Length: 360
Image (cartoon, rainbow, N blue to C red; front, top):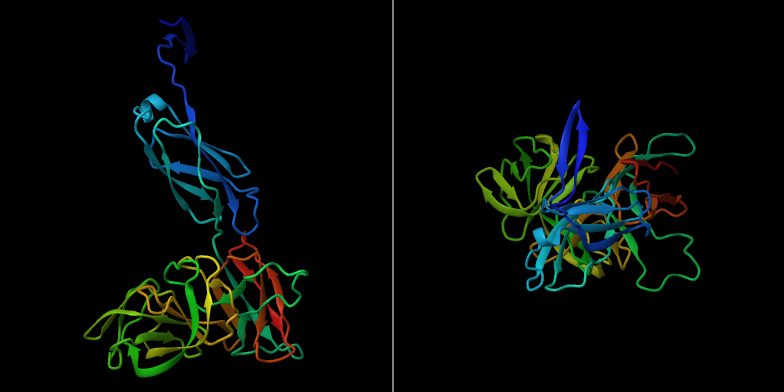
């Protein structure tokens, strides 16, 4: 038995004997980076194991370790492998779920794959006014364009192009997923008989005529500044069940335009250069598509349709949610009109709302 010693607490003296020493060993080590900026500097990284018997340690530069008492947590490690599940978290970044297998009779610590942490997207909003008078410009389309002063020499191909969408993605999409322009054909119109709240997967309509086959739903405010397309899971008397929750809220009656449309793909096919997450409002692709409507992953269960670019309302205001995936974006109003300004904007990810205004 080990030597005893005394501890005084609250005017009471305790005699203590250490009869058990627990040694923790690092079993997994890893590092995270910033997907956009590279080095993970200044962030507070936390590691949350699925098991309560594991300990963790992190640094301010993205290094981390998971430690354990081997005899308690992995008693058969000499002959048996174990899988450790944990989550990487940092303020301003998406959570990353990890699963690392420790093989039997390993040489510790096991190195986990390096993870590029993905920043949470932000909102970009602003106003477009006439330079001469300051009057608001209604119906101006705000799109992403390529860098007007590209670096020299240019980076190796494929060159990334950012595509701005009026509403965020409903689903995740893998790298190399196809993006293509579509033309729409209206097969029927309807009105909402009840308000449709953001997050709802069911809308109440006065008719479903024209919603058969491959048709899907277009919902928009009269100005079309707020609009989205929803694919259909099922229909019933006066009800349409959607494949994904709505991004925005829509009022009943004439305050919302409801159309049932079908799509035909046209033009070149772009491909995603990085995977995309549900909630993203920006795509990074190998071609710049300055078009009206596009389909992502057409012909699959995750097919979704989006209007490209934001639109200003009667007072000249616009807003886009889900802006991310790039350190810098280049915004331009009314791309078909020569001579209008391009705004170079380094996205401020520490600000939930970025304001970018235009005078044209």
